[in-house]
Structure formats: structure tokens, C-alpha cells
Length: 120
View 1 (cartoon, one colour):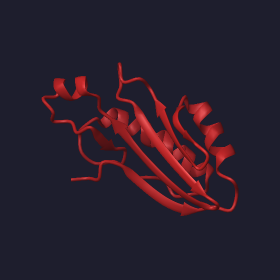
View 2 (cartoon, one colour):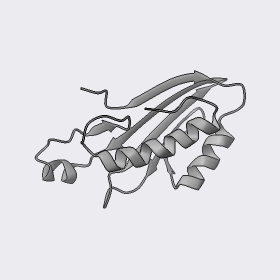
View 3 (cartoon, one colour):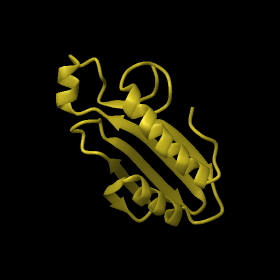
View 4 (spheres, helix red, strand yellow):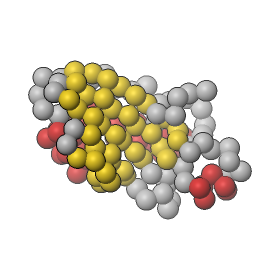
């Protein structure tokens, strides 16, 4: 079974926050918590498509990124709890395939802007 979150850790020379904030604004991700060196972003409310989550922690040049799809209680109930509460955005399997593909495309755009390899 895949890990519930796509996790990447990498180093960059520039301050990542201007790039991350510009990307979030362009892609429709809203800051839902955090500040300083750790921020949690969310795209969508979960009404039509499961919310896409991205958490970034940056300390100096070290960046830790986690991305996942959050399945709410109603969605999980309607799937008879076959969907877990968190689903990785990485490819593989049929569970929440459309929101995972959408989130992966967004995150891969961010990874390209940060000069990092794309998620699978």
C-alpha cells in the first residue's frame, strides 16, 4: 500500500517562499494554517472534488514538501470507507484517480519552478 502522502526533501539556494506563494496564488491554493517556516495550503473545499493539500517547511535552504488528497467523512462514508482519510498524489491505483492527477499536475508545476524532479 502506498504511503498516504507524497514526501520530498531537497535543498535549494534561493528563498522558496516567493516561488511557493506565487504558485499557490496562480493555482488557487489557499493558506489554511501556519506561518514562518511551515505553511499548509489547500485547494478546493471537498464539495465536488476532494481537497488537495500541500504542506511546505523551509529552513534555510532545506525544503520539506508533503502533498496529499484529503477524503472527508461524507466521501469516505459514501465509498463504504474504502477510501482512506489521506491519499497520496503519486500515480498508481484507481482510488481518487482524478483529484490525484489534478494535484500531481499542480505540484509538478511547483517542483519545476523550484528546479526539482517531478513526482511520478
